[in-house]
Each structure stands twice: as structure tokens, then as C-alpha cells.
Image 1 (cartoon, rainbow, N blue to C red):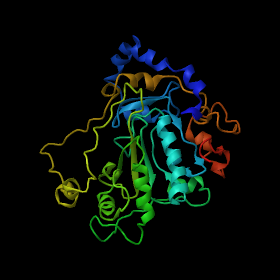
Image 2: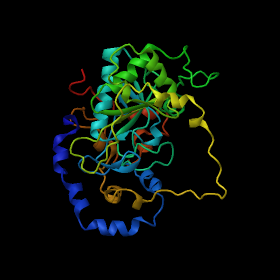
Image 3: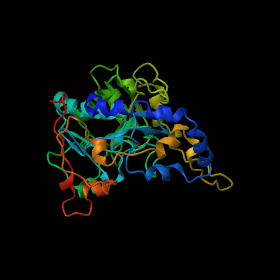
Length: 353
């Protein structure tokens, strides 16, 4: 985490903890239960809470303080779907993505990563797309290689990732699309000690079980799940010292190429649920349903600009961004003729050469 600015973290190292332990929790509790859905509240925040990095709660029920955004472009990655403003994460997650992208290029010859959703600036439930990704420790990586040019803003909004599945066969890999490099990329992601799970489509897991000849020690971390045929999902463990963060249970021993995988190729996972006799009114999580610290994360102070939250001391100073620019659209200039012209391009960080 050194390259995110240790001095900045020290300045606010205990700020959030003091808030969480303070009497302000009582007043936050009083208004959280009857408020709007938490996804609307967290989805409206354009910038993170300015505090020491901390993940609160579980991957599908929590929030993030002191989040940082991965730069839109790096030496070995490009971020996609910029309008969603979901490229924020715990510094440990962002550091892992950058390391992984570099290793993918240097060690297995992958052209570079296209990054999907990580988290919102303050984590929390999203308006669409995910149940998890709430505490800054999840990230989606496209299975489409990065092109050797900088994509335009419009391309990042409209280009679709490529499915690895055969459209004409149930849960079968398309051999004209899937390559050994895809397997190496996923297994590289699973190899890092801090990675807890890598979620993939059941067909991808089966392909790895059937064909992977390398070290299978990390194969058990690769878990089958619905969807995930266009991208894979990396989840890391709660960083050391994250007292408010709840880890997922450890994966079972073995490579996972057993009955638990075979179940996905039966009818049971795909059976349509029976319709209830009476319509069920959907219940959306409110702020009161999240860890108590999330009320303070939601309402805590923000940095002046995204630039301040994104760029650490290892980057050259980018062009100034107006203080009024508090949304992703304002920063990247979505309405401009060349939307990406104002996005600062980072220099390589120390240790990534």
C-alpha cells in the first residue's frame, strides 16, 4: 500500500474508528431503518469517504471507507464501463489488480486486462448488476484480451465481452474461442495467497478440471457459479487488521473437480422456482440492514476531487481538475468530443517495471 501515500493514510488512520466508536452511532441508527433503499444512497455517492481504508461487513452486505480508484488506464490494463463509477476498491484490492495485470503480461503473455466492476466509491449495495462487490474486495476481469490501443469512452461503454460458451450446446466451452491462455490467466489469478476465490462459469471450471496440467493446488479456489462466462470474478480475503470485515468460509480441500461440480451439470441448478401463491413484495435493504459503521461511511467527508482520491505519490501530477468535478462524467468529460482527453495517464508505479 505504500504507493497510495502512507502519509495520507496516517493523517486519517484512526478517524473512522473513532467515529464508529462514538456516540454519533446512536443518531445514525435512528434514521437508518425507515430511509430509502441503501442502494440508492450508496449509488448516489460519486467519491469515497476520506478515511483510513477499511472494509465493513460481508462481501454482499457492507461498505467501504477510504476507497481508492484504479486509474482509468495503466501500463497493463484499461477500465471499462466508466459511467458506472465502479472502479473503486480497498487499496489491497487495487494493488492486487495492478500486480495481476503486470504478471499476466510478463509471465503468461496476456495482452493486458480489461477491468469490469470493482466497487462503488463507498461500496454498499449497487443499483444494478451485483449482490456482492460491496466492501471493495471483489473485482470482475473480462475474458476478452485488452486491445493494443486506448479504447475511446464510447467503446468502453458499448463493447461487449466475449462469452466462452458454445451457443448451441449446454454448458460447453466454445473451442474456437477458448485458449490455453484463458486457462493460464484464471489460474494465475487463483495463485495469489490473498485471493480467496475466483468465480467462473461451471463449464469453465470443468474445462480447467479436464485440461489443467500445471500445479492444481490453487484449482480449488476456482468456484463454479451462475453466469461468469464473459468474465471471471476475483475475491480477496479481508486485509490484515480489518476488524469490521467478515471473511467468507474457507474453500473445501481438494481441487473442486468432484460431486460439487457435477451438480451444476444436472437439472437441479437450472430448474425454475415455483411461483408463490401470493405475490411477494420485494424487500430492499435499508441503511439499517448494513453494519452500523456504514451510516458513517455514507455521510463521511469526501476528498475534493476524484484526482485526489485516485492518484498517489508515485504518479506524475496530472492536469488540474476543477474542484466542482465530483462525478465520473465531470472528470472524464463524457459530453466532450474526445471524452478521454482529460483523463490523466499514470506513470508506471514502483515495482511494476
